[in-house]
Image 1 (cartoon, protein in one colour):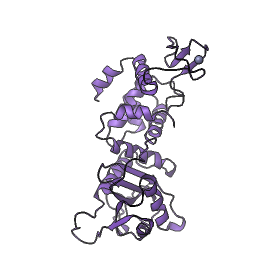
Image 2 (image 1 turned 180 degrees about the horizontal axis):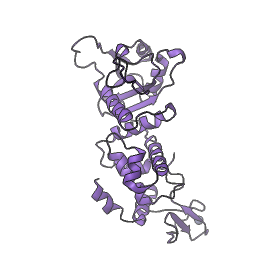
Image 3 (image 1 turned 90 degrees about the horizontal axis):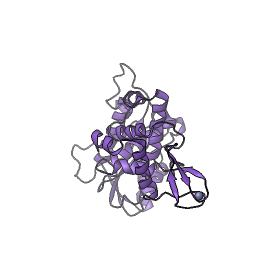
Image 4 (image 1 turned 90 degrees about the vertical axis):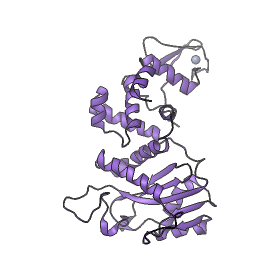
Length: 302
Ligand SMILES: [Zn+2]
């Protein structure tokens, strides 16, 4: 959907409400107090419906990311549109200018949209061959530090293992290219990620029996004793045999890092998972023409 199509789709707040009623209630809103479908859209309050049976009113945005917001619904739709279409995301400052809200509101809107993005449930994917890998995010590259590469990783410790950055563990299905990634708690005293931590994330989206590609990091040795078929990539060899590689997950890391370092500059550990969810959602739905509506479905809290 491009901007003109967005404008056509949502010319008024009423149009947004009608669309959301279609998404949330399949077109037939009902009263949460008495379940009656004899309800009507109140003229005086754009988000509120009135029940004719029990005389209560209700917001169709209750338990959604829009619940406590007084921001115009058209602005919300525009913000979602911009957020989903910017390959690297969008900053609060940019959103403030584009949509015409305060910085505080823009920041909050982005946070809420990220919550919806984190509602993605990927349980049914990851059935063929997957790649698992970890990356390390955070910490501004120091000026004049020649030891760092483009990703901000320390060159002489390329994979960042043992650094003070925050580890993120990612799994990607090589067939449908869906990705699942989780921020891991860094181990105290800079210890490397454990096999248990890696296995935990893998188990969230896969079952034993599938084939898993990893690099040579020793903590992955736990996989074969847990029922996975484990293939390792040897990064020291110039050419791999073509099958055992982790190129897909590595390309996702590149996108994530471009966004984190380019748009968001530095992100505190507290919010990192929300940003990771954002990049996963955009990546997983990059070819989904229904991405906008999917976001609206996920805006309903689960
Ligand atoms: Zn009612």
